Length: 299
Image 1 (cartoon, helix red, strand yellow):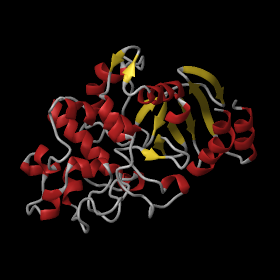
Image 2 (tube, helix red, strand yellow; image 1 turned 60 degrees about the vertical axis):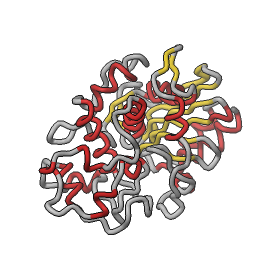
Image 3 (cartoon, rainbow, N blue to C red; image 1 turned 90 degrees about the horizontal axis):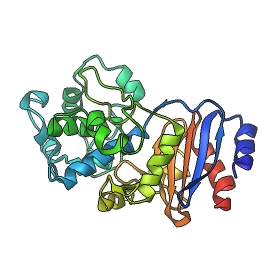
């Protein structure tokens, strides 16, 4: 099943670590370019943070329309709180529509930060759009969600998910990078193996049930993996233009994916009852195109 895919990415000079395909609950094939050790996941980490938010919604600990600033002490907020900041909700953060016309905390911007208090920094930047007005991809949205999780639960997002998701799925207690003040990064920095990324996709495909145990609410997965906001004006390849859910991207071919920089994917194709996991270090769209052209027709 992966022979043509391997040949196509080799012909394009793409660098991959591993690829695996599961269908009807069985792993069909896996190909390794490098050992299956934990790799740092970039924005694929965001989808795990979304699972923690869903658990808190189910527990009644927060609502999607809660004001983001309501979870933080006054000293973390600007001296003057604007109407736009007051209007920013958990839902806006999930859909990457926080009211900023440019991102604040993508990787190069984080490296340039001179403050250790990233929450205070994020809220200090004035919004030039209304929350919900436009999709603007920013890891800062997910970082703030992770800070909310920590403030609500008293636990870091990683620690909150260990007994609820990671351990039941056989992932143990994975590393997840933190900010200078010890808040789980949320939007990046989770370290998992390709096989674990595959299992995460299978959990989503199974609507939150793993080995007979419900880990994530079914209705939350349905919401998170459905198109919630338009991304037609966003940059990048075709698969960046068909919509975004709650920390998930929609696919041009149907289904959805947890998506990280350099072609890191947990691709879920419900109509095919299939999951495809890839860990790589390339431009994203050429790898997705290879998946659609070589693997998808065989499912």
